[in-house]
Length: 117
Length: 106
Image (tube, rainbow over all chains, first blue to last red; front, top):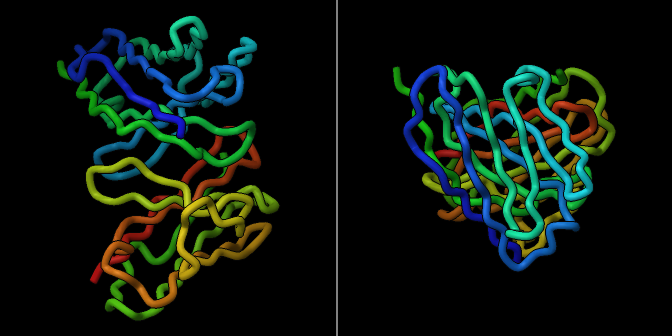
């Protein structure tokens, strides 16, 4: 059973960068699309983007230029970097995995991130 | 972006009753739709993919149907563990988008 675990700072200063890591257990890094999803305090879910071990990545247009997702197969991890954060980026961030372009079958437990001024 | 609209926002039901949740897409997504359940303090978990294919371990009292722009999730004989928030999500077009959720409450 695939296990995902997010880690990183839970408090980030406004205008700074948010960096989160997802550690993957019991799965090959080659088999899935590795995705970040966030959930606002109001409950709205937003798919931020994904990366594949092959180097392919795709990001939601509203974040283009501010986001990077990368996969490190040697450490069984993938990461999210979000630049120039504002209070609007305050959310719970989930890492998730899909088998190709399909439903998110696996989710991490989530990590709450607050952007403070 | 494709807008996913779920109704109602909150559905009040009693244990043992049936709940029907609706999800509408602003443009056709074929059958490329998933349903997720989220309980307080937990991550969402997949119930259905491909509009009506039940994920592993999901009880038979859950069913889903639809295609194109109209989708339905039905829960027969609600159990206490079914009170949660349910989200639909389309993965036909990028960016993938979620509905705002339906809370099933007592």
